Image (cartoon, rainbow, N blue to C red; front, side, top):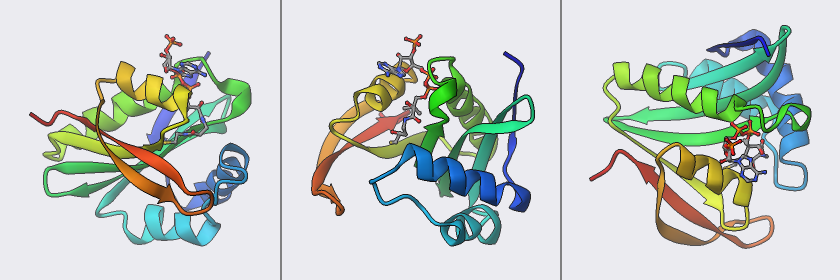
Length: 151
Ligand SMILES: CC(C)(COP(=O)(O)OP(=O)(O)OC[C@H]1O[C@@H](n2cnc3c(N)ncnc32)[C@H](O)[C@@H]1OP(=O)(O)O)[C@@H](O)C(=O)NCCC(=O)NCCS
């Protein structure tokens, strides 16, 4: 598969919003305004990447850079393009780019019942280091806190 990964920009906002609605249906998906705030208005402190197959956005991820720490906000891949290592490629590229900006460790929250995502993060070197009880307000599910690169 011919995959291109590049930084997201204002022109990607609708594609991001549409994919978010599909990937996080029933889980409080972000609005277009939320992506505008993240991708455009805070672009000096965030990095959003999109993965394109045949010119179509089929995956994305985002991270906030705070001092030497990368706080991952979301990772999602179009259901029709899953299990083709797209999420893996996005995370690798994010780690490469943010390392160049001085980021040395990365963290995220993931639903404790999201086995696919937990397996993905473990494969990419993240380790579970705690629980945030009832982190997801829409249904009260706990979050697993995962870290990569922290001693
Ligand atoms: C989680 C998600 C991003 C994975 O995307 P993907 O592109 O299919 O993942 P990849 O193909 O890069 O998978 C990499 C590794 O993750 C693990 N993995 C991914 N999906 C998995 C699944 N359904 N079951 C078990 N392991 C899985 C595997 O170890 C896989 O490596 P392998 O294929 O060599 O076994 C995708 O399922 C998704 O968008 N889910 C909905 C949104 C979501 O929950 N995002 C995470 C929020 S924290």
